[in-house]
Length: 546
Image 1: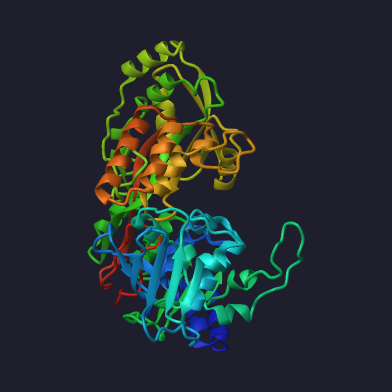
Image 2 (image 1 turned 60 degrees about the horizontal axis):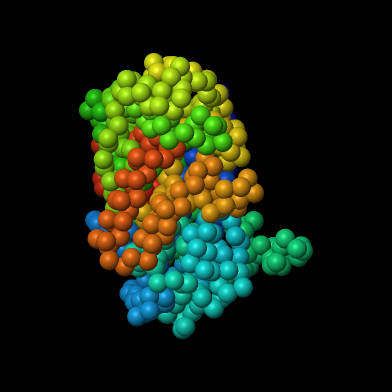
């Protein structure tokens, strides 16, 4: 009955719209997906906006990186290097403050409008003045709404200059410019869609910079252009024939909302999707045994951790913090709960980033933990709670830790909740323990080093709400060393500074870092050139062919 209705409606729709509807509502209508279309099963329910000046979610980052251009991008062949995207070349002034970018010639947006340095400058201005969640990646260089037009400006149609407030390591500045908030938007097109807003004490600017329109609209120049996003249903991309580089191999990419791992596996096996993006260990193993399918993986710049709130007098004690690091069964977790989707990692810098330390000094050692608890004046243990998002593998890891803590006399109660509930409590600093994940905001060691060590105002009214702040933990010496690393222009010396910070952090901090995520995907063997990148904004679909 559903297919009969759908076929009747199909004749009334455009070919593109019909394909989108078919793939969402009735995947069984195709024995296999069309040759010119890539269909991915993906848990895209985190998307709240498609505006690159606002979006700060993992799924949106992937869409944005395929639909918008940047001045520079990570070099996928060597992530310690940066390569030009819109920028043909760049230089840094002798004082280390001004970056000058020369644009490639004959660039165009998907709309057909030319891309100029004025579009780049306005994109920076827009992101700073919108002041949404990702704006800090640019404002940390001293940009404000009052000075951004002077600090980020077009010298001529092909030349853009960016002036920072300190002589930072160039690698830090350039890595930040690979973040999606630095995406270049089509100024002319967006200005056609600005919405007036009320000007009062909280709204300095008289328009929304096209934010309401760009939540679902598109004004980019990437390999693909955004045609449609329907929340918790589908994202549809179409090839951008105005793209200045290698054109996308396929005409269309469809991200279908599929949350459950088992549903993705079944759809992949049936040929209803080409790629399954959220496979859990059991389904991943099944896919790997199917002759028509293949799997791939890549370490991501995301670490999973347990944090201990120093507002709890017991958890505040250094001996307790260290004891908890000996009360995690890392080997068992690695062999079961995160098999194939993660690797044990105990420091805050993920493998692949400058200065990452791969030391894993902690193992399950109940006797050592009891000794430390006794030293803290808690020989009989104590009671504590942990806020846990009710998804895997987080729930399973929490249950494992609950069991190993009990072996040392620590009674841990698990408080389950959805992502919003647990994160809201964590951000309010009202938790005892919290298990979560942290993904780098940009592919530079400062992104993680800063959030795990910096806490300039530990009061509840503090505005710099890093992970250290959320745990009411202050580490001024580590923070000082982290800040110094930003100004070290020698890459080897900078890496050594981060290694030293991590060693000190391992020995004394209220964080038990457990593993680094490995992103996995199952796909049909008919696909060519499908690869996962080192971050969620480097999963490029343009090279994929069928």
